[in-house]
Length: 440
Image (cartoon, rainbow, N blue to C red; front, side, top):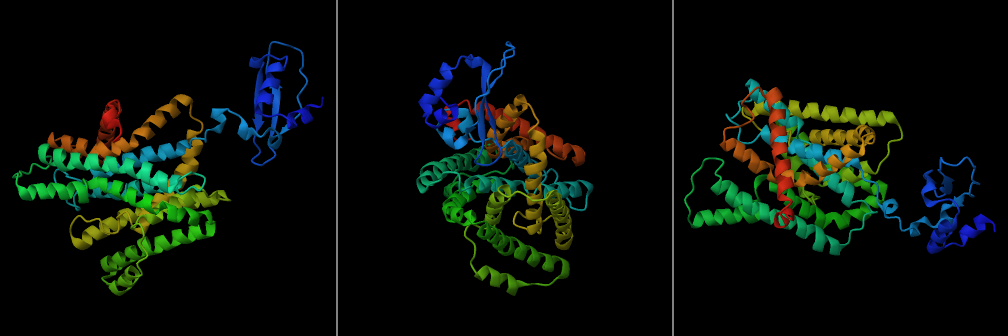
């Protein structure tokens, strides 16, 4: 019987039976799948035995449509390829969050922007600003992908409850234990009705500092079904990116820049844009959409990749320069022109994202399985590190172990790494407790 015709009639069970009946031992066979990125992939059965000198007759090439490979019950082949560069980016972003807080929160002593320590910490802080935008871009890359199944039921029964549980648990922790029991700021409080009201406000409305990101995530989940159909159309997707960048980033940045540098108040221009009421998910929607659009875009020429790196570098330099200009203008340590929604920060985040997509991806794809397993663990723990790092920072602060103990040029990166490592170990231990694991 002609093998090609025979395979065309095979169902999944028939194909398995046929392989069982082959005279060649199963362990001496392997399926070689040659992927040519088209619908005409070919499958061959190849004799891989090195024990026999007999040349086996090559089986005819089988068309992928004939085999209907989607019916194979090979779970490994059905698993989507893990993007390890995204794991690297997630770990890098979580480290930057720790790093930026070590440069900016509860500093001992409070920094003078004109001092050596102050200048180093301000420069580090401005450089690390893409940390949160990168997290948002990763979320956009994953949740706006039309290939990812996401229904309203999944959003309201799975994703939002999971984030809200984390938010509720950690706001209670930071709002009660971290502030009033640990007393990291050494303030004394009197327990009364006003204090109870303040605790409720912190726990329910404001959250514990960095926990605002969890509330933002819930908001972005609510709007995701609106944007998924839009980004299916590449033209509309890039239009949305341009609209978000102009309205939520470029306009506020230009407005602040003219006030600080030229002393010109463009309040009429700023108010007009605000009155257009184009915001549907705050100033950070642009990052969410950019994450998917850039991740799903392949540059036609290498020079565009290098241009993206240059854009990121320019954005980082501008963020540092603008931060110093703002400090000297207001004669104090301020964050103007280096906030998450400023366009220069967006430029830096874009450059980092593209760098990880291409350069880091090329590097990590050559690593061994041991390294990749460790990377996956670090990536899985990144959310937990984000949630608990501030309380570790507060504990170290209470112990007088802080980021200005030594020269900040080398000590801040080391100090941040110590906090990150401490958080990593703590997350690993806490995840062994079933009740706590659900909040990490």
